[in-house]
Length: 143
Image (cartoon, rainbow, N blue to C red; front, side):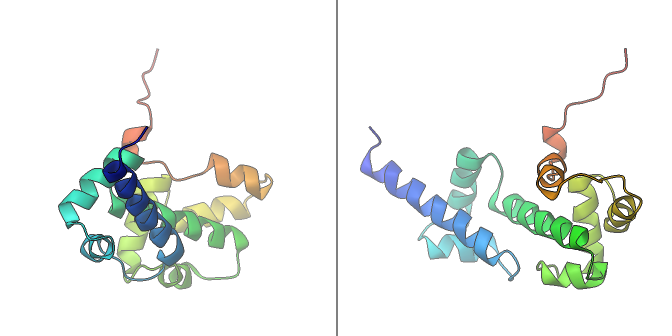
């Protein structure tokens, strides 16, 4: 059985994660998230990483990029509009984060969709093309 203190901490971490999921398009920072659950920023970051395998900031970036990918697939917004819609304040930062997580730039991702390279049902595309951090991708070792 989980002790009450650990249980309370897990509940607080879920609240932070849920807030990120709901408010990914708003300006969020770790200090503000931590204050919302009465923790220091450092403690929240350590506990969040232990529970979910990545920092609150990384989790936020992943949510934003996932939403951006969905909006690109939808096809009715420009890359710049998508950038601001998902909460980035800079197109350069958006493109850099998108490229880091997806492996291609937002424009290349859109071009591939338009060329039919991802001609699969949306739910499959979403699962297969989910952003993956570099540390999660296995290294390619040639034979």
